[in-house]
Length: 312
Image 1 (cartoon, rainbow, N blue to C red):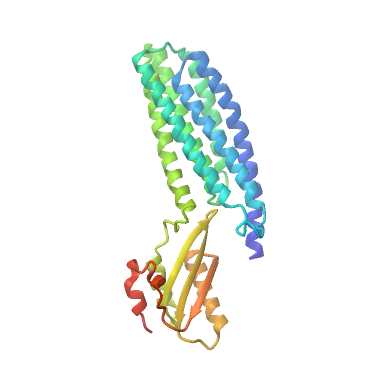
Image 2: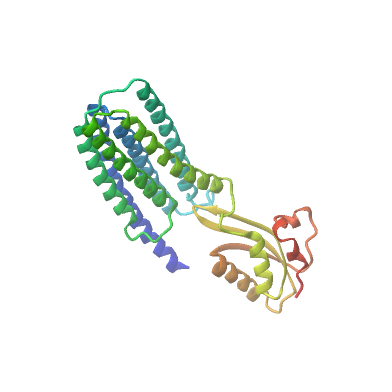
């Protein structure tokens, strides 16, 4: 256990470094892009800069989250501060949605009253933005085996940005070649749709975690059946609760068992089963010898109604 803890601490340092670097790159180029967008009159550049703003915010949130995750649990916050990372991802997703709406609105105004766009200026800035995005994406993706929601959220943002920069380059080429300016708002809307897609996914994941939802990959009915099958002494599993704290699944469950010779050994086998088959390292198991007969006994029984008839 101590080993895995120290390992995560070093990846925390690594994540923090990566996020700080990416934040520096993104924030710098965001300022360049806003300036370029205003000078050239390009909405696609401004869309991309808006994109980069949420990017920089995402990276900043993620950085703070990594710092908070290091704070040890205390009597008041028994799980530590890991939920802050989820909250950051949630706020971030909402910010993305708001910026997207603003840019789409502005694009519609532009369709009605086309604005002149300086293609060459736009081109130069868009290429610089693309380089910055590739750099930030590379920094975030390099060697990160850890599935951290914030680093992943930040990388998602940067990926959307990459596509935004490509869009701005295409728009600049078309404006330079044909002088057709409506391509600028059209592409800014396309960029916004990409942003919206990643925002929606992020919103769904973070809301599920904030609402104490079970990990989407976990089938509780199947877990109960497998536990009864794998450990003969287990007759019935009920009162199962699973939730996430900063992406770590936690579980409490009641297990009706045949009275064992060695209580602790059986407890350890159940714990081991949960950790190895379902990656649930933190479980609280209540062992009972009598069948459960309260109103809550059939919680999440719908998917696995037959598990409590299981006799070995």
